Length: 264
Image 1 (tube, rainbow, N blue to C red):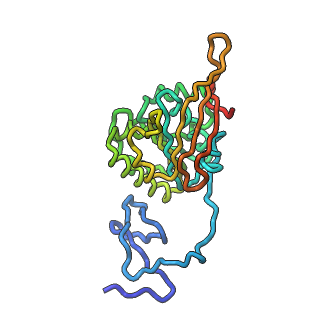
Image 2 (image 1 turned 90 degrees about the vertical axis):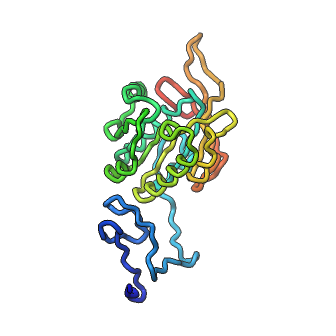
C-alpha cells in the first residue's frame, strides 16, 4: 500500500521504466518513455481564479506572423496547407531559417531530396542553415520520436504530412496529437505542411483541424507583376482558419519573388 504524501505536498512521480523522478506536469522522461498514468492520491485540481495568468511565449518567424497571432507560440502545432506549386516548401524553409536563430531546427524532408532543398536554400540566401538539421524522409519510413528526444530541437518542421503518411487520415491525426506532446515538452513549435485543394480541403485531412492548434491556408491569387514576358513576382495569400492563440480569419498578402516570400 502506498503511503499518503505529507499534507500540502504532491507525491513524487517516478518513470515506469527507469524510476527517474518526473517534474510536475512532465510526462516524457529523459529515457524516452511517456508516463501518462495518474498517481493514486494525487490532487492537481485548482480553482480557475488561482490559475497563473501568463502570456504565451512566441518566436518571430517573418512577415506572415500576423497569421500566427503575432508570432508562433513555442508549444504550438500549426498546419499550413497549400495548393501544388504555391511555394509551401519555400515558405517552410524560410520559417525554419528564422526559427534557427533561436536554436537548432529539425526539418523532416518528405517531399524533396536534400540536394534540391539545399539548392533552394542557396537561391533564397538563407543565413542560418548551420542550425537546420535535415532528416531525409523522401520515400522512407522514419521513427521521429527518438529523433525529437535525442536532438531536442528548438523547432520542428514536417514537410509534408502526405509525404510521411499518405492518405491515412487516422494515422496522420494520431501523429499530430503525439507531436503536440513533444511540442509541449520541448517548448518547440511544430510546423506541419500539407497539400490543400482549391475548396480548402486539407487533402481530405479535415480531422487534423482538431489535432492542431492553428490551421493556415496558403494560395496563389493569380496576380503577377511582369517585365515583358518575365514574371518578377506572384501574389500569395495566407489565411488563418483556426488559432487557439490568436484571431482567426486573418489574411496576409505576400509576393513570391526569386529570393522567396516578402510582405506585399
